[in-house]
Amino acid sequence: LRWSGHKRRGVYLYEIILIINKMILTAGPSITQKEIEYVTDAITNGHGEHWADYIKKFEKSFAEYIGVKYALSTSSCTGALHLALVALGVGKGDEVIIPDCSWIATASSICYTGATPVFADVLPDTWCINPNSIEKNITERTKAIMPVHLYGHPAEMGVIKGIAIRYNLKIVEDAAPSVGTELCWKKTGSFGDIGCFSFQGAKLLSTGEGGMLVTNNTELFEKVKHYSEHGRLGTGFDISHIGFKYKMSNLQAAMGLAQLERVDELVMKKRLLYQCYKENLECVNGISLNKVSTQFERPNYWMTSIILEEDFNILRDGVMLKLKERNIDTRPFFPPISSFPMFKDANNSVSTYIGQNGINLPSGHNLTYEEVVYICNTIKEILGV
Ligand SMILES: *Cc1c(COP(=O)(O)O)cnc(C)c1O
Image (cartoon, rainbow, N blue to C red; front, side, top):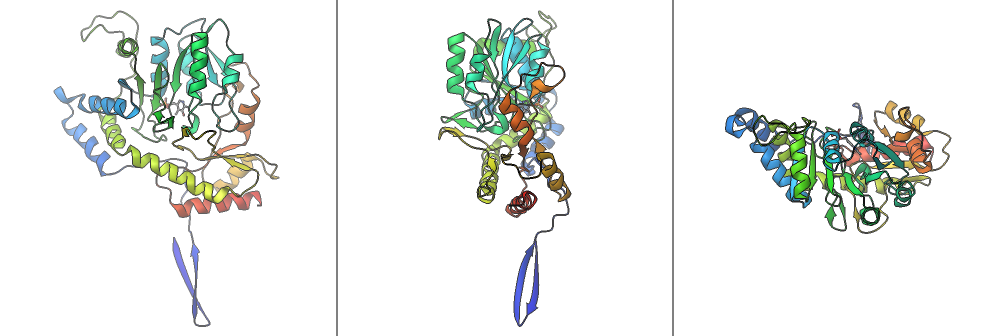
């Protein structure tokens, strides 16, 4: 931010010139001395009998934070989702219902088990799975529902749980982007049989790469642990099943623990950024921002996003390109997963629409209020409003 003053007729006129000479990115972790200290300690002392100190602390604190009994750290959320499905007995011949608008990992984890992802449409306001569309897609092969808390917005877990009980289905929450999101004062990830989080570099809480599986079910947790350790029996070399290697390292857990101790601050910053965007973009007709449909939803606003709902004489990709020319990096919404060549297109109209018209705005932790104003003004200018 630069102040520039001109003296005119004895009066200083100041104008504020915001100079953006570096790309404003969509994400970015918030690293403090705490993360550096913990990771340094893990590198220096985390060996021998201390090899898992941070892993144990991180898992215990994370379970407490989410409000569940058990947490298992993993190398990614994708790995956690895969483990969850295996532990629930999902396999060849089974179907799992997921929202069409999500990251590919939601579907891939199902394919790894040999089961088939079935694509439900999403709701136009919250962008999360539409419960009516879940019911329409249930067959006698359906084994589970995997709702996604997209961009940090809570899916309608109450209604989804009702459906799961009625049709005897399991629920795995893809809570990858929703650390800190609440629904009815309960944290996402704690509603289903199993919940899975991501700590990949762009997520709210980062360990570089990493994930966490949470559950309240003791039997399921034992199974997940068993499969996550190569199907090992105890700590010896006896194996009873082909399992997986999806572990988190002590170094990553050190970073994770430091981030978790700052989680309220990290969530608050995201909510603040959303408020700043809202203040500056709310007045623009034809744009809609993240919305809550009831007062019980408390998103973490991992990514403040907009949908271009009107004809602005410029398409979404054109807007993104122009923003990039002005040093503002954005992300398009996920295209419907079912539109990829590996699947049969489910033609879900809302997923298709938001996939073509949605933009994730810069939402990194280091973003300043001035930068948000600059971004909003640039958007308005490009749209000609
Ligand atoms: C980030 C993300 C994932 C994948 O997480 P990884 O840790 O990269 O495996 C899965 N689902 C959704 C909705 C995500 O946003």
